[in-house]
Image 1 (tube, one colour):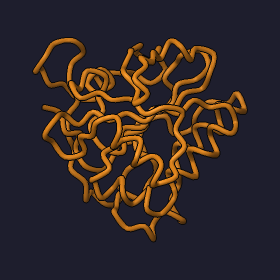
Image 2 (cartoon, one colour):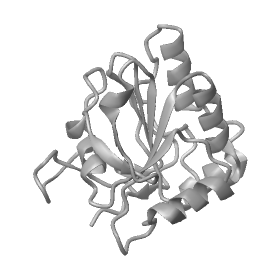
Image 3 (cartoon, helix red, strand yellow):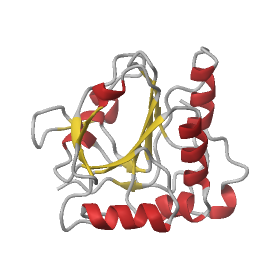
Image 4 (cartoon, one colour):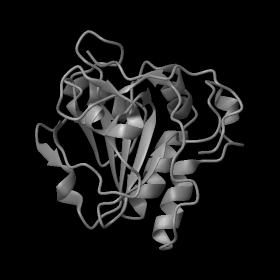
Length: 208
């Protein structure tokens, strides 16, 4: 794990798979180098989407909360949208996941989620709604943004922060090392990901 020089973020906790209410470190929920946990969740289109549907595709999972200042940094600077468009243009499946529970910061219904996608000119393959937090807890997602990359074989090859600048300053984006882009480039070149695990930064995921 690459050490962070600034710890201006709140470190949340993940949750154990299946067992409601039992909290465990994120590292216990998923393991980089192992098969990515499968899941099915409802998309804003009303359809159910399963990770298994994309076996044979590289997949990015992005946990988000539109009210979080760390998320806003990456969307207001255009950084997240640029990465989404770059990735999907290369055949990558990008799933944006909202795990905020009803009444909590970042919770949205399908219509508002789609309005956010349109207004921000975002370009995910789909936006998934996870109001019960089942998918987020399955992956041990602790922060927004929290990023994961799954390769074509269904193996989790990256988990952690989007980059190495854990701040809310949009001006930090241009000089940051983007871990997700680097992971995608490594996968495309059939090379191992040099930095497969980092500490996610941002707002804690607003589970119930």
